Length: 204
Image (spheres, rainbow, N blue to C red):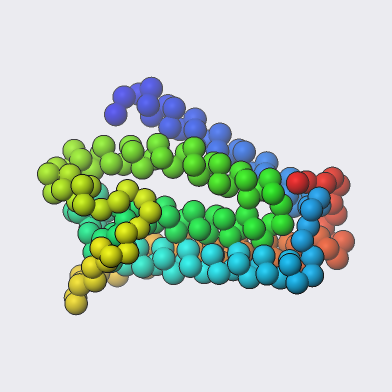
């Protein structure tokens, strides 16, 4: 991996974090221009909760199979039998759920566009690395399993599977981030609506 690639990767990561922080600050102190109220708002929140819950359970499922084995062997059971990148798929669902519960078009659009622009490069970069590290076994896996969207007919669940508890439980904290964020947004929305957190401008 050359130095220019590493520098570009670091710049992209820092820039993404900066944009995300500014977006969060803007959302906290901004009032949604087209906030959905009443039953419609409740439905949007429920959909957001379903997506965040699905993302959390899905990421736990992925962690069960991949924790301790990533970049060391081809994991082709469970969610990885249907998609080569199920972790990113569940992350996308969770991110959309978070975007919905913010009641803003801009945050939801940013999440989708940012994912569509950023993660393909991440996935392609990881694939090139795995081709070198894991060789022909990964190339065969790559040919038979879709890159992103799952093919459910390929699902393969072994009767027994070796799990590394220490690594698995360490990864669990990342799995819960969507539900934690969801509840934090619900709380902040309540504080904004009650006037405890002031809003200074409209956001779309």
